[in-house]
Length: 398
Image (cartoon, helix red, strand yellow):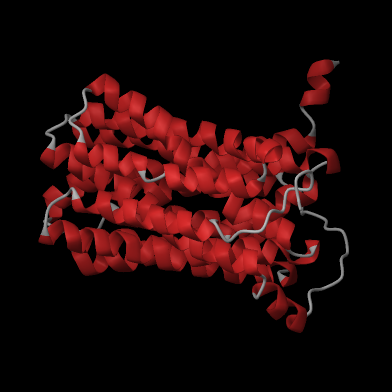
């Protein structure tokens, strides 16, 4: 009887959407993990690599916000989700067919446009299908699929494929699960039913955007993404080209980074329940300087690199605080989805776009240590901004 209770529609839907959500971020981060191979094969400079990394973030953020606002007027979320899963799988497949810089920019932009809408469609579907008492857990589980599958599974799959065959086959391989998941969603998922709720008022929404915590979270998101993308985008190149680390070891480093992010993604929000949102955010925002600075200044062994990645990725785990928890607790409930989407938009479009571009330009001008210093500087600015946050945790709010 216990097994029957587990295999409810809610739980089975969570499994389907967990892998679909994770697949989006596997596709999103695939270029990063294969960058050393692509750069060598196609002759991209660090600046060009930064542009290709950044353009996806720009279009991903814009399309995420647009579909978060307008998803409630779409006739069928199920049909739209299936369509976008197929489209971003086709875009992923197309990357393997590219052999020049301009075409790569176009295809990566298309990946961002088609991946972004799938995010609010999945999250809103999970929200509608969740038991009230499990909404927080279900949403956290789905969001955790991103760092787990993109950070752990993607490098473990893609780098061995690139070593044994060609980097292009990595993209061909990633496209296949997308078509499978689109088919599963079409035949399994029911059209989500949403509770009626008062529609947001535009004048009220403008006032919400002026909320001090919301504005600070938008700015923190920019500098967090600058730090994150500067590190994850250029660390593989740094290890391969400057440290001469074998690609087999780099795949382990990237997987460990993903595991660390996944674990801390849950731990740090729990710490904020006990110690408060602001002190937790402030502490880990300052601590986020440590990872890029340690990597840039110390010659670490294989074992020490793994230890550092497992421990110092704690600094990346404060993301749910500024992109979900604090904004949602700072505004009326009916605006929570909009401000969370706006935070994602701002971080992706500005930080996720300009961060890798600036880091790439600095790497070409100096060397591959430069992106780490760009990230550390951004982390310090995020720390300074966090000092202005007003506490929102119900138990410790003043």
